[in-house]
Length: 146
Length: 105
Image 1 (cartoon, rainbow over the protein chains, first blue to last red):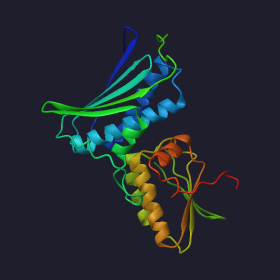
Image 2: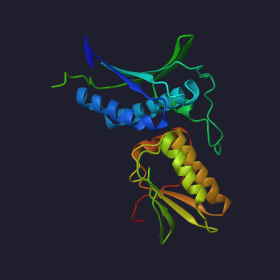
Image 3: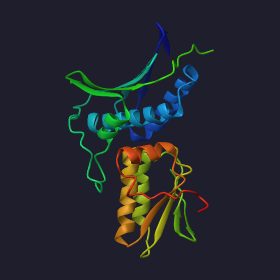
Image 4: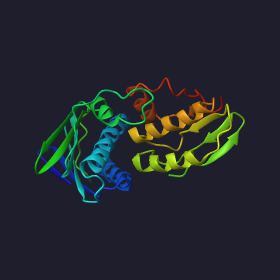
């Protein structure tokens, strides 16, 4: 955990396994609760929703569940909570974000990332891909941990 | 994820426990695939112990709904947490999953 100029930066590493997602969130929310106890339940719910979708995409479509670790950065500063999920696989197409037909059993993850965040973008390059997801937070949430 | 099922006055009551995420959704699908659903059964999914659902969890619920509907039954959600309610609303699926207003109803 690092505080630099009022900005909190956290770095997490997760196995690229679906079973690792819940423990990863427990770690993330524990660190956020400690550093920013004033984040609202609604903000944390939305953040969990978009972060988990991004990690699932990185594991399933980025790494193809190959077991190689992936990195998740969380940044918090006044007015903004951001996640960056890195994968080193072939990536996926983020442009198609239409909502799946009502009875379709797949195809809502990207839509949720777009619509539950305030900013979502996916950068691909030969060295690795990054999903950026940001939420606006109203109250200044940062405080130095005791 | 554990998925206890018990018969209730209104039909079958399913009470999953734990986050209904991609890993749990696989288990949920396997479990419901093994059930024998009588015709015209109401399945109540009590979500009071489900703190979180992702798109895979929503897909698993849709799979259950499809199975129940194929048997002329219906699905009702009980004790829907705010996060689940929000995800259903954003994905415009709230109309497919009627929710009880009150667990005691």
